[in-house]
Image 1 (cartoon, chains in turn brown, orange):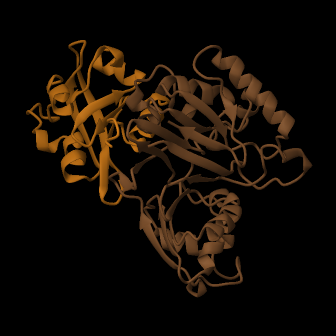
Image 2 (cartoon, chains in turn yellow, red):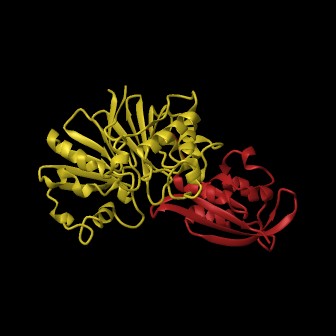
Image 3 (tube, rainbow over the protein chains, first blue to last red):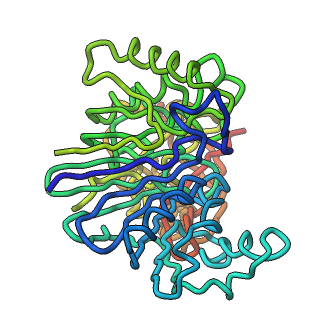
Length: 282
Length: 131
């Protein structure tokens, strides 16, 4: 069974609609894992989830599993405009990282009630349940998903999807360089087990190396570090994700050129994530 | 699907924290294995971290013949690292050791447990304070 994903949003930090971002898109993180059944598996709820929601309604999907890497707004702000939430016949299970302080439900509902939003969550008609991410892999219809904490401010995870021997790692917000990438054994590299040998690695590449120096500790990677990370974990195909909001389509292509230059002949050429992109691992 | 064995992110961060300190610092995992010590600690231990493999902290500490300030053997359960590991609380103690160079030294040791969540103990940090 192949693993198939569709990218509905890959911009970092804040949505960036406009003529300069039409090729790669301005919506924030949201990725759909395409399943061959009546359910949907969604990673993150950035603004890309709005269009996905309309698509799911059109497809008659009534059961949705939403897995959140973390709760920064660019991964959550689309949830309030996720059309399936407004259908009483829809079931939505929301999974996210544990916090030492508040439950997932309490943290999400902070942004889903006045004064930040006109409607209180109790008035949402869909059947919504919140869960801490399971310690063990979660399985549905031939696909398994596991998570682990990764380096990014606040409780944040990355995901690894597997179907048989095929695997995809999704680490959209990740700054592994903060704890070292090269010269470490893989078990000491942030997210190393998630990304190890993945057929496809979707990884944060928000900055150019010259930009990263003034943004260390913000939780994101330079393109140089993304390429080094792919090499360190032995992943195959690198998809550059979480695009810097200030970066135009042309700017992104220059960043992609840099990634390809750094990769050389080492594996497939890195490529930019873009809205509407289909990724199939077979 | 079973993820490959990986150090907990808190241990990875503790290692990075320790590696940037000039104070001798050790990191131990939840099973009591010494998984990292920094460059400053290498001076105390007498061996580079890259030359040693992971070992039980108890085995390592025993090599330094820890003694009370009265030169009595320091019981394992009274050592700060053991207290942090087994009782999962912070501990601090001044005691005597014989360093790798054979010199008896008085040291102060602070150990504290690391909890990723209130119910998730992931390891211990041990700091050696030298005069």
